[in-house]
Image (tube, rainbow, N blue to C red):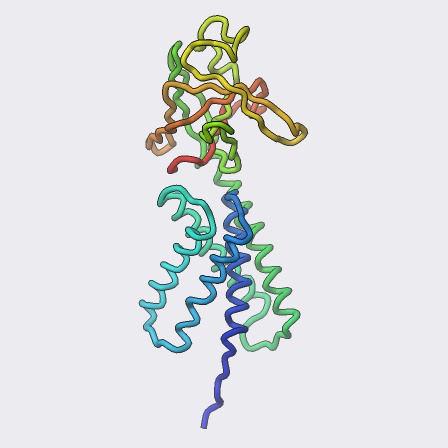
Amino acid sequence: MGERLIIYWDVLWLINFVMDVILLAVCGTVLRLPIHPLRLAGAAAFGAALPLGFLWISAGPLMAWVVKTALGWLMVRAAFPLKGWRQTFQAWLIFYLGAWLAGGIIYSLAPPGEPTGAAPFWILLLLAGGMTAVTLSLWRRARQQGAWQVELTVSLPGGVARIPALVDSGNRLVDPLSRSPVIVVEEESVIPLLPEGWQEGAVGADSGLCPRYIPFVSVGKADGMLLGIRPLSVEARRDDGRIIACSGAIIGLTRQQLDPAGRYRALVPAAWDW
């Protein structure tokens, strides 16, 4: 008679939960998404519990694959405030890339069949998560310069400005009154298109641009202020020709040079469906 296999479902749930927390945290870090610990933990708990059903319900390989694919999609939607299916697909892809990468790291460091104690196992799990985060972050950084460069078209009363821009998913600056996303633009790029006397009396200018001051925090400046205006319209053209309408955007003017190399002169938040 063969040996009896004993599986402790609570231990299995705990392992799945810890791994899901690590992978979701890696996903949020790589994509620079806002991470809310309770929300992330809830998504990880849900993701760890559902696969336990396969201990009692037999399912074929295809059904198991479909369930796991849908589960990953639901987990990233539950863990992060994602906008649109494109951002959801990106988070889902990073989540599963992280899972495959972490699994490969664990397999290479502790091949099946070799005994591993409880403490070394958890250390190995955390090590795999850290190595996965570093690897995916380096991969994203290498892709970002080309994939996230866009041409920004800003329509103002004095004309249209076309500005090279970088989509910065870490830019979550919003206007505190309207909660509209803020696109940071070098002042010199748009000043010639603003009404006369704008710089002398910016906040009181009656030009339909709804000027306002926008507080911000950055490295070395804890109480900064940007002068914000509402343009007539803003569009961003990607390298593949797709045009994104940046509806509701506020333009925040800065006198600082955003990129010393001059590759971009504006920072666009990932607030729209990219």
